[in-house]
Length: 251
Image 1 (cartoon, rainbow, N blue to C red):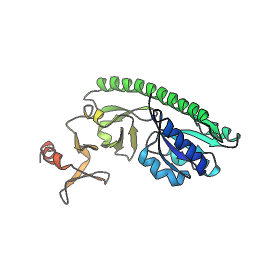
Image 2: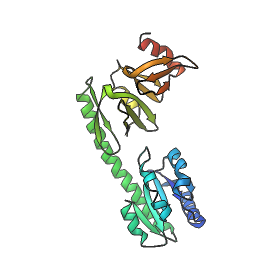
Image 3: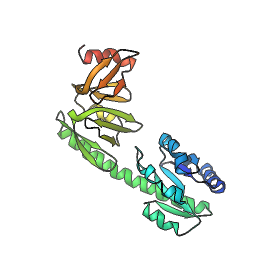
Image 4: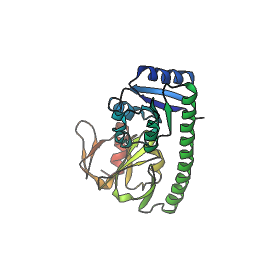
């Protein structure tokens, strides 16, 4: 069974302590990775730690700021709302929360909610694996073609290879930056795309970046090697890859 990484958004110390203690007593299923009094205070920590689950106090301040969680550049964490007001269960329904827990919290209710989260995540992973099989099938048919199939968070997209400026590793995900400014977050890691991109035009300049040399407009050698692109961005070339890169672009 997977371990769920959870973040707590709660201004009441007693509730935070109950959840933290639950995590300590049930470390095989949950890992509490941080807490904050509200969404604004916790947003940077959430972006850094990318939790699977957020326990959140269903007060108006947090409910009004939920869009900030939906705008994260990784899979939106599952949500469990908490309140001493049973009417807030309706808010949980509107927010697509996995569950609602009535305060004061008890270990049994927390456990049931976490198992709901685990089941939801496992179902999504199963669905995602089906999508990845479809992607592999599409990419094998389009091998050395001008398109690549990419599994984004909620769909499969067919990208024109020439439109890709670079791909960036985002933990276990990959972010594609396109010529029109669009950014697409894929559910696969960067290494899995290496073999599917045309090796004549793409090069891994860094463990975090694969670039399309068709979009490189300048190579800067000041204070290290950097590639500058048609969209105005620049990326560093790792020292251990510089010599190979120079050969690749035939300088």
